[in-house]
Length: 60
Image (cartoon, rainbow, N blue to C red; front, side):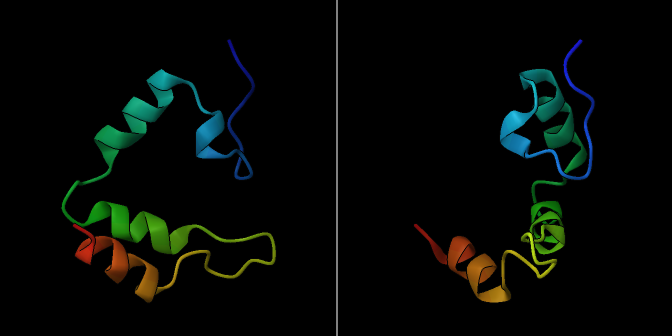
């Protein structure tokens, strides 16, 4: 078994199986937006703004 998952664990450090389980929990319609808003930078501020999210939605 790998390292325990903590609040500070980066998604890129998760195993494939855990990433897949996480993806199954996130609603592909709106859930990813809620998750993006909850991600913070080291200072505790939101990592992604509404502008970031809108630009991703409008990307081709």
